[in-house]
Image (cartoon, rainbow, N blue to C red):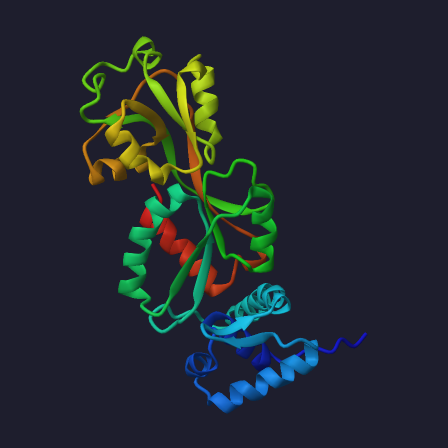
Amino acid sequence: MHIEAPDLDLLRTFGAVHAARSVSRAAEALGVSQPTVSHALRRLRLRYRDPLFVRTRSGMSPTAAADRLAEAVRHALSIVETAHQQVDRFDPSTSERTFRLHMSDIGETVFVPALIRSLVRDAPGVRLETHQLDVPQILPALESGQIDLALGYIPDLAGTRHRSLFAERYVVVMRGGHPFAARRPTRKVLSELSYIVIRSHPITARAIDALGMGSQVKLTMPHFMVLPRILASTDLAVLMPIRLAEVFVEMGDYAVWRPRVGLPRFEVSVHWTWRFDGEPGNRWLRERIVELFGR
């Protein structure tokens, strides 16, 4: 079966114009002339029977068809890039590859600073993109090459290869001036606190329920990283992983309790799929992550 499709140069040109919203900036990014980009756009418009981009005051605005096409083009180019790299040696000092990682907002806070410092030092041309996917999306994204690795505590993710990085535990965090901050974290004292629950990390809500403190939840929010100001200006407390709590302490005056009341421990891992097990760049990044964060 023959399927007519544009060549890779056309797809790269389309992706550059969609990202830059400008023919001139796309040409500069691709290292070609503006007429070359304009000619490629004319061919793409004929191929897809759609204007794709309309010139406006703010630049080249994509049509709805262009926006739909853009996601497929990104995936296709990512797969082609990976295919080329699979047969090449990965040299971090010269690579200009973009690695795409799934991680939660907690993961971004815990992993990204040290990882970026390491890349700036040893792989200055390498770029990172972080994505927050729903769990059912992670395995297909890994298998297709849409993302390279997934990091975090993802107990419902099956079918991957993975390496445990460290065991994590939950702690209770509140402002340093909280009336309870100097007390011992007994079960009775814990039951007297008022709590924030984070929807994106439901295991904390289950832990609070298991301790019989569900009625003490006063605020429910989507993400951890909006908490510092709220905790600093209220008498609310929150359960969070200890590594995230250490980041909070660096940012301000927070008390951290390490109660021994049966709060669950969990394993944080890096995940990938067998298809990319031997791919040099993927392997290099996995090894760097284990070197930085492995116990």
